[in-house]
Length: 592
Image (tube, rainbow, N blue to C red; front, side, top):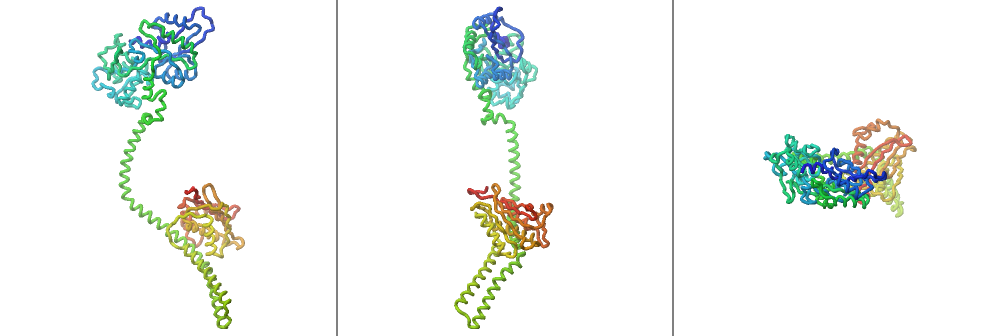
């Protein structure tokens, strides 16, 4: 039987050759036939004269060129449309048929085949004295000699059976020893102890025994699976043998003539013959289980394929997860010990922030104390003057209803003026928890300017340039935002203290930049060096003789607490600085 399988490719190739008469015309049509072969064709073991005569008589005018190729070369030649016919193993035929539409026209039948459907499989061998290898699952961790991972009987058929037994050759469940062709080298590796197990095509070992090259008693078939009518002992199910397939664009008449010629030929002296195309559905099922050929995409779009492809990585990931879990448990124990301290620290930090902001507001009020006293003194002096005047008029008897009404109105007006100043100061100075609310940003800026102007009437005027559409909303603690703006306006006023009154002006621009609402406060103060500018927001850095250096640092922290930022850059045209506050806009129920 070894002779049959050894010359299998040569038999089929010669069967497809067309003998040309000596006087053949020069105008012959060449048809190239790609044949899966790992060895050069080095001679003829059979007399093909009868076959050549039949083909030449049946299909005159054609010359068939035979091209032995490995699997990759055969695939590339089919993809480029260079072949008229293809002779390959069952698995590659199914893959090429799915991808390029080649169509089988006949199937080779070897004399040992039980039927066209049950002709080829794998035999898994080990030495007869091995007691540790009796079934396919015993191959886990063993050295397995194979020809190549695209050999059908020498690898693929067995790989499927092993996968069903829980041994994934591709995933490294066994140590593959690649020996190459001829397939007898797999048995040699077994004999020389280079491998524990060998995978060969069915009937190879029986062939070699008949030739006297080995003794069957020296070997053991692992998980034997006898098949009625099949003359050898496989370890797997049996599949259809190699097909001859025509290219998708092959002339149908020529393909039909080739098929009819092959099918009409009697068996050779060695028993080789042709049959009608077999059903290759079992090959499709094998490809699906191994995720090869037309089912190769399962490797990337199925859970089983992903596990198969990334099994080593998943195992490493699992080990890492176990380690992480152990580490996480340990960390959780430590975290529980420190959670209370962390919560207390956060609570203390929050209280400190509130206290610091409150102190900053009081600091601003302290700096404005004299101006506030002056602002309150005016309505009080006016009230006193009206009261004294009314007293004198009463003493002189010149009092009338109109005079009393007028004086009373003025006293009430001045009282309301003083009360408004006191209420604004109390609101600004009140210690409170942060409270976020949704309000138009223009209102917040307007109130900050009004508070600043009321509390500090002698300071520079403020020019507001609102470039925003009406209704732009800001979700924030608006009192904190006003604190930032008042602090920036106070700094702007201090920067221009040495300028003539007519040159002092604070500009505020309301605008939008991307998803941010921006408030820019600019002054016309002296030039500031880049080195000094870079330190403006550092705590305890100040350019004022009596300053604490906390104002801008607090303003920056308030901006960041609102997911915004506070920046400074030179005014254009100079001199002067521009402090810009960026805050995210509130739109459609969420911050942008």
